[in-house]
Image 1 (cartoon, rainbow, N blue to C red):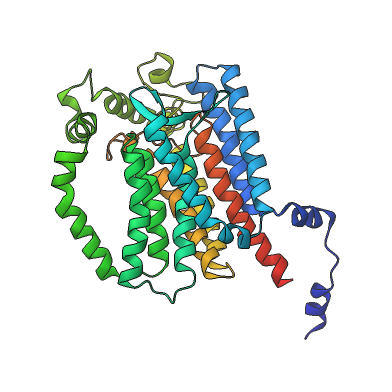
Image 2 (cartoon, rainbow, N blue to C red; image 1 turned 180 degrees about the vertical axis):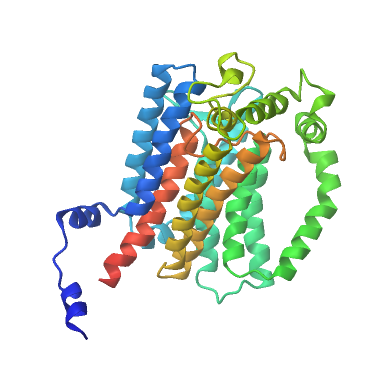
Length: 377
């Protein structure tokens, strides 16, 4: 061993390094998340008609989410694995309770009213589903075998159907994606992927006829031809495209979104906030935002690649992929290439439950990374 390598081995860590180690924080991931949250305040101030109260409420939610992330980052991955099945079972039981006792709002039955606040169990199941599938596959020899695939598929299907019944198609897609991502990282063959895709294609007419609600069918029809009902079902997509197109390459500048200011764009601070961002910051701004998302996803996949065991690797990879699906589905529906399914733009849209869920996932990722460092040291 060279003198330089010995000096590096016995080098005294700085105060900052000791603090980071005690807090179990991954600095590159944390800095990316902080940057995108700061960007969220900039966009929300414009999209929310310069409402300071809205920013303060969002700041409180982001603060709570970061606190939750730090708490989870201190939990050992072994504990996550130990309680995965129990947490998944509790989540499914709560979803069943929603269908029986749930609070109905805006035509959907998605919440449990606990008196002092409303709780949406489907947010919890976004995390516990990949935890459960990773736990189930962790002790098997990978790649995944057909029987294991069937069992895992049933485990994914149970919460997905319960959430779709509420109805909440957007969350059902995210839950199914999180579980399927575990199977993908477990080494499912491309032949099996092709078979699954074929089966989905074969049963799609049945799903369309017997399981989809009228408004869900209307969303898909509207996607294909939004101009057929420009003042009704196609209004959201048309106004969103106008906002994005009017931003051009450089954008109109901060606070320059006329579609939002004149209230032509519905849900401008929540599901369609990307249209506001595109109008104000243009193509270059959108590319910068996508680059920031790419950094978060890339860092998450890096953590997954370095994970110390199969469970941690599968779970970390799934959490990274789920974040990607969030971004892909929201931007896809805003630009008019995917149906409108009510998925927020992660870390940017106004809201509390989704950001807490996302930060919980990042807390687990930091736990996987920092506890690996502690064990290796």
